[in-house]
Image 1 (cartoon, protein in one colour):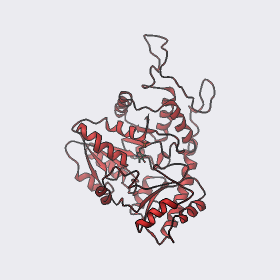
Image 2 (cartoon, rainbow, N blue to C red; image 1 turned 120 degrees about the vertical axis):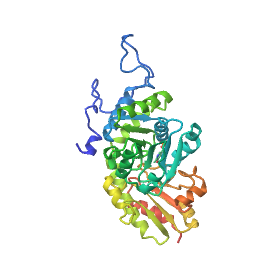
Image 3 (tube, helix red, strand yellow; image 1 turned 135 degrees about the horizontal axis):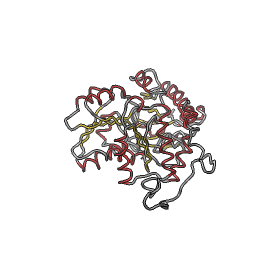
Image 4 (cartoon, protein in one colour; image 1 turned 45 degrees about the vertical axis):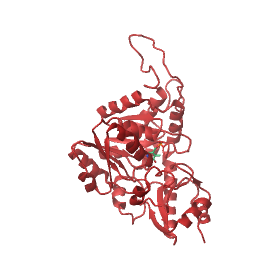
Length: 378
Ligand SMILES: *Cc1c(COP(=O)(O)O)cnc(C)c1O
């Protein structure tokens, strides 16, 4: 079955008792036990809820995993996965990870004596150099945020296997439609389902997915033990959003390709970062490990006056935090997603105050370009 169909049809799509074709919302925190010696499948909804379990099963299938867990946010999924490590463990993390991930590991997990080293993972030898005796995992984002750097997933997996390290990939930018890291041997995939998966700017949610039974048991222990579960209502919204993932992504990606071409032609634009452009340094690597360049790109203006003018005057888009929605979202990383990273660190990474990130929506591209023109100084 191809992916677009898989989003809509499975054995579980139709609810057995009633024939309902949408995910039933079981708004129940507890479940009656018919036999005190043999509890039913459900007892208390933090531990398990039929709505959440159905969504988790569905999502595992889409990400080519055996086990998925739905969390109350992307960062809850990420923190829960990191919580499976112990004091004394060391993780190697992509240097331009999502700002909230950076904040979680440098401001919170560091208190519990979990060590992190940040490296540019687009060069695999940078990772190898940092491996220490207590290194337990490599944490990656590819394409990365906001500069769309690419990490070679197969090389990372091979390196991980050689040194007995887990590989963890934040697959938010791609969604399982465009990239399935578990198929390449990655151990754990995490997601902010707030973005392309939900797709409609109406829900905060996250997932962790794996094929490994032992890892799945550890993730479940944290999900149940720390309790950052996704509510039944929000599970429903994610399930509803997922059905149109393919057609939304197709349209958004087409828009991203067109916008990147237009941006490249503009005199005032200094650089465009998008793995769909052949001149992208790792165009081939990304092409070989994914099914498309996705719908997020970033670019730099030549000066700050133009940057500010653009952000205040661009039309037909939303200027906001977030990405992966039906609306085109323009964001300003230094004040939004990456505000948690100190200025000098940011600048070293190339996240300057002239950098703008765009997540393309499903509008007509002509109107997006018209709106962008409104933001240009003459
Ligand atoms: C948004 C985002 C997150 C965090 O997800 P929330 O749902 O906002 O908690 C993590 N990783 C990436 C790449 C993101 O874009």
